[in-house]
Amino acid sequence: MISLKQFMETVNYRITEGSDYGWQCYGHDAYMLDSWNGDQDGHSLTIIFDTKTQEVYEVQAHDYVNQRAYRMISPDFQKKVKKEARKRDSNKDNAWDDVDYIDLETDEDFLEKSQAIVDGIKYDTRVQVPLDLDDDTMFQMMKMAHERDLTLNEFVEDLLREFLKKEDVMFGSPNGA
Image 1 (cartoon, rainbow, N blue to C red):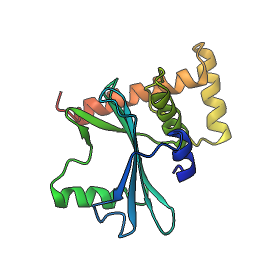
Image 2 (image 1 turned 90 degrees about the vertical axis):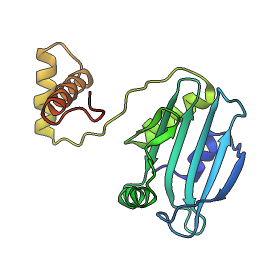
Image 3 (image 1 turned 180 degrees about the horizontal axis):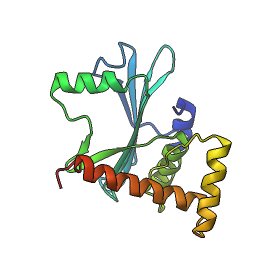
């Protein structure tokens, strides 16, 4: 999970508001800081952290220009957040209007997207997925990618797309389409 320092550097130390965090899933010492650029068609970033331990629980990046919202929730608290959302009958996945959060897997991905949003530049909207492969598997995948004249990254993307297509066929798409 990113640190308070990384968040502050990303928003250029510009904090526009802060408050106690209203939900209990992160404990009694949870606090929320926001950085909004003041433009309805701009951006805002949010961090929720513990005021005593400085542990970061959740970060959010809201790109109002492109109607995208990204977030990361600490893996240690994801079940608690979902449980409290069910208890409150709240859709915690909805960022605003018809825009849902896209959950990110890596700090680097969140920081890259957030910095680009703050800087107002184009960014890669794909979600980075960390892969932890043993050397033998990695070597086999590199050979398979080479046989198809693809980079390893392109090969892995193709594998994931095929897997997701099969999952969609087996279980149906999440939105019912």
